[in-house]
Image (cartoon, rainbow, N blue to C red; front, side, top):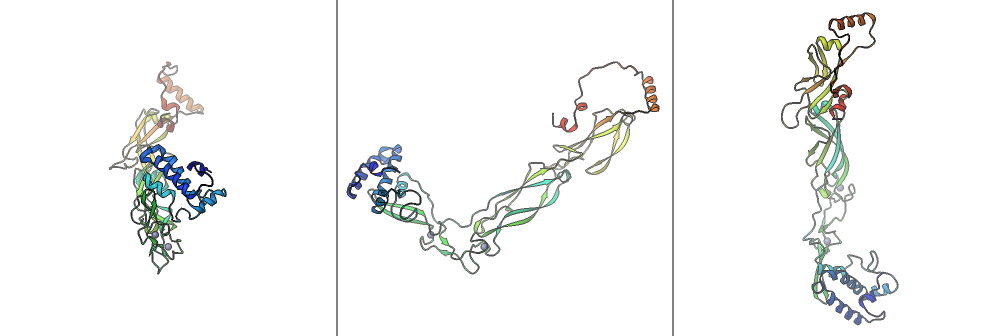
Length: 374
Ligand SMILES: [Zn+2]
Ligand SMILES: [Zn+2]
């Protein structure tokens, strides 16, 4: 606790007149207009010391070891009226709110964010989904008026609906006018004599709502869909904020998505790759024929146009890229081995020349790894 007597430079038994004189002298010296901004802290201390020692009640408390300027201590409290150091300080430094007129009770509600998990087919074609949202809605009992049905808000008797109270104080500088939010109505200008029991006078209650949402084709993990005015309703029937739905796409067992293109791996036997064949592939669009040319190589990509994900902006779709993996037979029986040896002889491949080349990345890595650039 500061020594207020020392700050004012007076004795413990100084008379009210001596205290006043000491304060006036210091205040003139330390006034920010005279001494500059840096004197603000000392000026504040002096003002606080004077606030306490000039008031017989507060001075008595202070002499008993209680600081009446501490929060919760002293007479009156922050809104208790009377001339306090806060007022004069604000007058000098231009602090405090420049609030003009009452604050509207209704305010806009907050925006909300929810997550929605979708699968690849939904991202590809778009989907209609239902979503449960826990949010604030308008109170059904009072309709957002905050009042018990049959009652209505009353103009505040303290501020007469202005929301602020003005106080005129006399100081050594002359008359000082200060303005503060009205404590009786919290600055709203009106009071609610009988609050709605359902919402405790908030005008809104928490509730679980079901919202249906159109998920457009082409959304991806991280895409946010904005639903205007579907967020929290504001207090006292204030407008609702917006609701953002953030998409999270689940991995698919077969297809890997890169942009709007899809990729998959198709395993074909060595003989089919060599001879060529037509296969049926189960895609997101149902069974599709895939034509393997004779001599299809491992790692070759067969592109099926327009079977990928729909473009989010604009028409059209990405492609489906089928990566061919050639399976070399193992566990040959005697007859199969003989046939292959005969083939090798016919092709002059019994003792092939070693031909070195740069390793083909697709041979050693799994499709997912390859596509993610690892
Ligand atoms: Zn209500
Ligand atoms: Zn008021």
